[in-house]
Image (cartoon, rainbow, N blue to C red; front, side, top):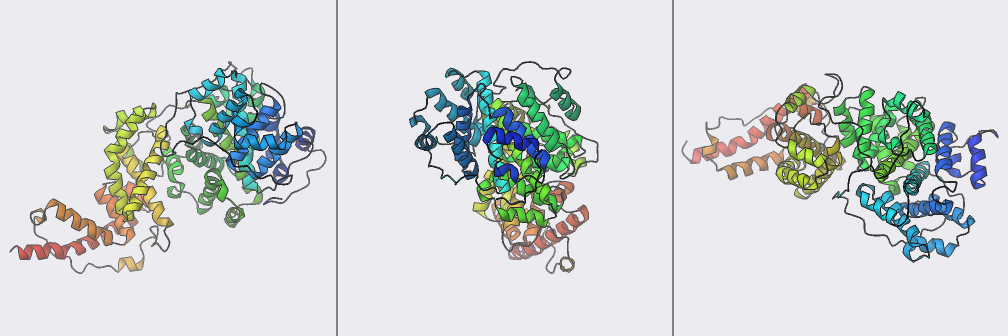
Length: 592
């Protein structure tokens, strides 16, 4: 039935009673989580508040949203469940299949077809949703309450799709094949086009003094996040969400709160959600994690100071978020191999799904960040990244500061200017690391995409150029680590390293520039640099060519300072030895 065993929760387990009352049975999705009853309680509360009753939208409208979102996600479990539910509500099979194939030719009213268009865009292309999409719904007669429900149901369906994939649940009914759909062409995800800043919906004012969920949020987080303030048209939903936070995020009997916040952080980064990235970085800062470390987890958690087990856990959450079609039992076994219990894995799946739910809500509501950017977070010396160098550099004038500020305010042309200004440096860095033109070009695209995804959370504690090169370094290093048969970049210098002795280091002429033209000399150095073993080539590129500080270079390579300095010395000697014969022979031919 699933990847996990089921235990008997007894006849008095109230969530199962609620499921029987609303659906007529207890779905496998919930039975698969009986090792963690508090999670089932929170999930059924969400579903009861959002899905099972006629409210601003009818039950049929909400179930249709869930049907097309599940179909677009390719999730057989949720699609089969929604198909069966809609049949029980009186919709025939042929119409349901037609709705999936082409909702505009399925006999729906024009407003209902537009409602499904909105839900699909939010479900599978949320970063590209804008105020204009909400305006289209209003033009077709949908009020704020109806639009809020559409956003909530879309987020809930994404939640259940992620949950069923991570738990490996089999359908409760004969699996229903998903008809091929005719969806609108989605935007190229390498180009973020965004929309007008929100919030998109009106809300009413609720006070923490009179509304207990807001008092809870203020106590736990120090404020009431805007994502909850934007939903005050539905206080019952906010109460259910507060219960979810209380029962799924706060307990530390399985995963720690820090581990769950890290899951939220990497998932939000993968979903291009800068609001949630900033929020979870702030949550981690309040728990003692430096902003530099949080930034690194968001950009590339493999380069962060995490245990192998926690890196594996975040790999698990990231794959479930970004590549659910590739997720399978082997991913469960891998985290088990790293010491996580079934209860902890179920909680990791639930946390990943919950993050997707809140990401969908934020993008659908158009909420702007709660936290202003600051130059320094946390106590000095608490950072894993090289604070002394970065904080000192942050005090310098950054020539990119104005462009960065414009990008953070939504100016896409400004980001294009940043790309044009720094593309050569990024490419040179990646070429030095990877030694392959096509790979360097691909990695350069990845670098600028990551930079754009995270620029909203860029705190300007370093120059933008340094921050960008660090992303390029991490991108290139990760690609190296993914190559088969690749010599490790992570090992501490071994005895074999110590045995290296330069054999042909000889006196160069005092002015090598007079012997070679700039182009010839550059080409020669590049050729010999590319011949060095990768771990030595990388340290030279970072330290001598890109001129990162020693601490930044050590952090990028996950080395201590002594190990980095030892490797850099050997690399310089190797390159000097390789170049010496060229300069000496040229000098001899020229009579020097």
